[in-house]
Length: 214
Ligand SMILES: C[S@@+](CC[C@H](N)C(=O)[O-])C[C@H]1O[C@@H](n2cnc3c(N)ncnc32)[C@H](O)[C@@H]1O
Image 1 (cartoon, protein in one colour):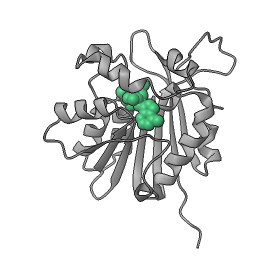
Image 2: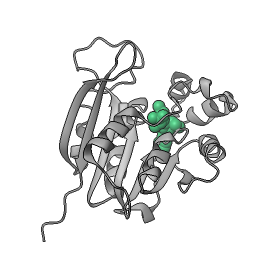
Image 3: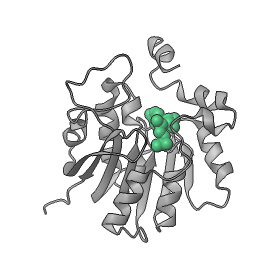
Image 4: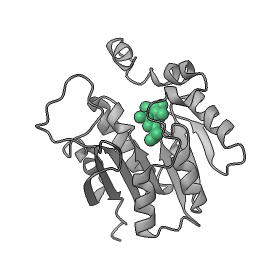
């Protein structure tokens, strides 16, 4: 479906029909594990993050588990996805949730989001979008961070000389340079194997929007 839409010049158009076609069957959404991202949970536990008093933004939130994780930890969470069907699905799954779920394109976010989030979490959205959209996406997310705010990116990782055929859905370290090019400082880069069987290589990267110097 991704290839079919891309050939027509619509690079993000396939997500909504993909969720519609799933018709409420979570098993048809192959990236939906229906649990919080272990890479996020481990990171939050290690950093002993307390979200109270902080605003978080979840990018391409899918079926909502990561947004709910952040809300449980006290963050005031806005979670968005380009697919309105995914957003309704989140609202049905978590009817009493404090999370504000909204259908939105990461490439075209409202100006009211500018510099307003202390923490942004992005998992597996950049990697499913074509590389020519990455710089715009990175600068859109960087703009949403408050001064001193942090962005955490989790993605499938590969080396630039790994053999790939067709759509890869993994990123190289160099692909992630778009975030530093968007003005963020990279403060941690982790290259690790997850706990899946067989294990997959992941990158977990932390960025910060620096505080103004004066
Ligand atoms: C591979 S899925 C990952 C979903 C979720 N982050 C997770 O880890 O389960 C990518 C998600 O990004 C959403 N998406 C793709 N392009 C987007 C865009 N431009 N703006 C917002 N969401 C987007 C898709 O609808 C999909 O839910």
